[in-house]
Image (tube, rainbow, N blue to C red; front, side, top):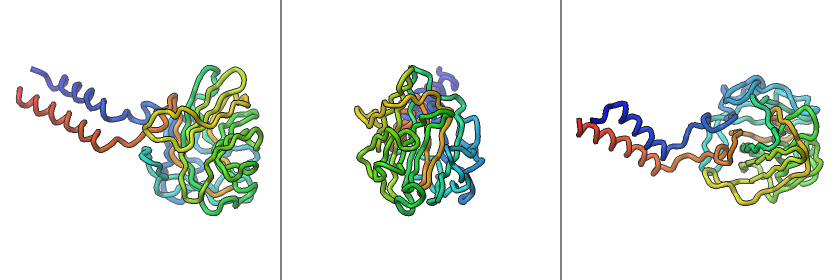
Length: 277
């Protein structure tokens, strides 16, 4: 006769076929910006995991650090798993920046890392200093640093990758629109020379890695110590993930059918156990 411990093991193994692993088990770093209360400063908060510091002052020439606030409600995109609130800022007249240091820096030659996050333009496009740019910088002590987001020069009407400051810009075909959330996934392949970055704009959460994306391979970024929110424009950001695979950073909410199947497996196993008992 099957004992209870063995039954539980089988149930867990069966359910695991249908229910995704927890985010922390698959990811290297995560911040869902699920802080409270709404309206409080992001500066000093330290939720999530995979970081060695709280949000702190950072970013090249940044002189503002209290403009990023916690706002209620997550951004959403398709079936992407989200965790709570978001961070948001209005347009400002000087460069603003906040940084979180990774627990383990990126950039070891021969390694590949994936990062994803949600952005949503707010207020008025182009408002703020330098045409109201906003996005994320892969932070490191030396230049170049990679910027991903809506730029302040060049293709100001597109999401881009560029060296922070605007050089060697590679523009996508996707235009920022106020109130419209974009899902950006960055693949970083580090080498001894120029690193290769591939940007996927609005890929399907839970789907396979796209066969092609926007490619930038003209910069040697090197060691990446952390993540910086970098902006002058009004925007919201949410759901930053860092992982080793595309699937790590694009988790989708399970379909109801999958959840029902998992529940059925559990109930059936319990029923069989009782009948044999």
